[in-house]
Image (cartoon, rainbow, N blue to C red; front, side, top):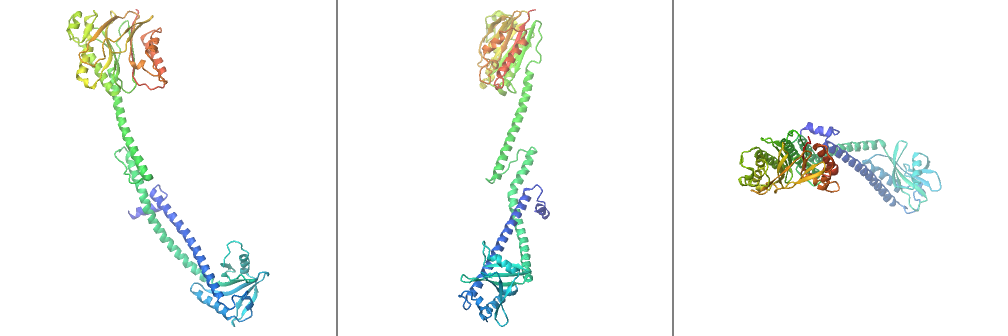
Length: 544
């Protein structure tokens, strides 16, 4: 890494970078540990130094003459004590390698008296005593009466003088005895100053060490996060081909795993969006297959209702005028759901239109000979020859679907009728579809039940033709099973019985009747999911 970039990572720690912050926190944490360790080390060294002095002095005093007798120091006042004198001289000489001794003496006090005495040697090695009252005495009084943390050795600073006081009192003594070792404060300050310089130097070295150690671990921790951030930026731009390598099982590894799952979810969502787009296109195309406008026939009203359950539907209806002036009526329900049924819906609708509009099949054949001249149609009616010919669209469609697409097993239930609007005669084939209702002001007049099986199941299937007359006031109503099999939130079926009760109520027009059924149906469904399409067709012969 370049030097400038390295300095930026260290100096601009407040900027949003995980590596910078981890490095900075690591350095601060390291320095705190270093300082705490230094404090404990200093305290420990001080205690070790004081214990060493106490042990040395007590050992030396125990070697003195008459040292086992109580208050042997006090009883030696005004006497020549060369052994004690030599000890103090020796202590003064061995301390010069660390600090300068300015005064060595003994502070003593009777346990029953408040006065303190300073015991010292003159040049003739005679131990003298004189009363003393200074700041050291006040600190020693505090030391004597201290109940907690008693210490054999202590540093006392008073009157700009620093001294070490060693408690040399023994159990049999009636006085207190403290050996005072005066230390030159200037020399000690210099010694401390050198220690501070060494400490600062060690601190700088520790800072550098912690800095690079922290940087190493910061980069090790932050690198996967930075890689994740870079890949996340690419994903945000739309590149869903990127994934993060998972190399650990810790929180970063889990984060990488979850990120990869999120990317996979986004890929799936993209695929769903493409499918949704295609379905919307299919929905628009399917709408094109439904009649754009219903033919307007004098004395006849035609109403329709179409509500697919999904984007595309297998239901369809069709109303178109034939070349001879008759009106073709179709309502159908292709099996299955989704795109497949929607494609077959388009195929069924196209085949029916093509075969019905081409009146070249058996043209001119007498109606009574329809059964013999055209395979697949049976008839019991003496209807118009043109009407019967148009109905051949059903068996032709059946043969095409069964022979060409039989392996897919697709079929449709459908009603195909040809209406002569002048006479009201309706010839029809009901290929396995729900019975259509013929109603009037008195209620249900009749039902147009199936005249053959569903269309497209087997080739050469025979479909019988039936005929009725729609008189003025009559209305033909067709529907798909999405109406009667709709379910309520309580999983109750709408049922044919409920539909028939609505159809038997008085009606004004075909559109009025379908609106009534639709309103009741969707109120019945309410918030329940719809699993099938709702399609209805109604045609009414006006009364005049």
